Image (cartoon, rainbow, N blue to C red; front, top):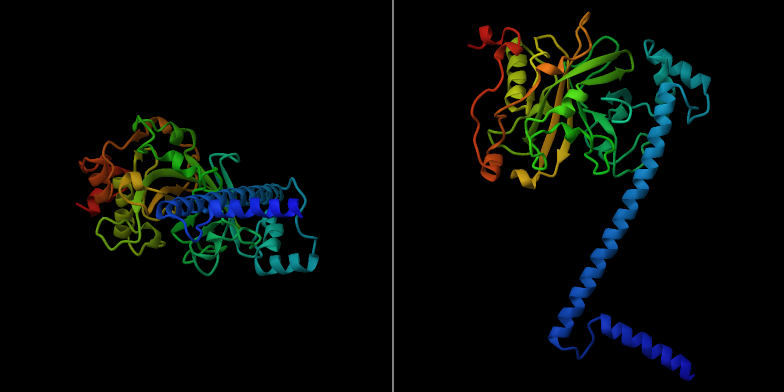
Length: 353
């Protein structure tokens, strides 16, 4: 009985030492509350780290298997169902064979994107009825913190027609997955001492995007840091632009991009009728005056008969990209006007004097 009482007393003493108790002095209560708050924060943080790591491992494994299926180097995750495959082909008679097993897994698939090379950004692209579902669901429609790369629900891709500007969203994962490496193109980052260093763009100037029906190379021509969710005049609402009713609309959209782009490449010119692609990811931008920012990459599809390579020797850092007002309030400076030749947009000067 003595040992039992002793253990009970030790347990009670520990509880009294950690938890506010009747008779405690105010300073002692404060100490205990602060300690418990710190303990809860630590537990939550460790739990989140563990869950994030588990999520990362699970998604990496899934994406590796999907890549192998797409490239034809791995077995399908689904059992062969000839009836289902015939149904998919019947519904999509022009579908590329490599997408059939992926469409069996998830009917929402609309394409596959590769930026730079397969070790950089290499993922399937899906599309749902809204722009929220795939923020927290993976390709198998399981809940995931990483989400998926997804096409704006307002975009259209089919065998006969494609929206003039495809907008693809993805999370900026700190571990580098999905669009986590897209920020590497940002040569005006606080962490980059030399803003004229656009070597990363020069090493990765193209995007390969395969829809269910064709594979195309897109040439990157701009990267912008913009704020969102605001009614201010300095907000660039790139995500709401999917088609162009006129040449003037197209030209003005491209001019808005080039004004804001942190790098310029005259080798990638633009003309009305070009198909564009927009890759959008989040940036925690407190260092840039706004906590809700987007880093956005813009590219245009290679034209028929055009060389798919990009002459990066012509590229240069924009000496004065147009940022939003809070950027200048925080970082200083101001916009000094266009740092690019308007001839990059074919016919722009003539129709927009």
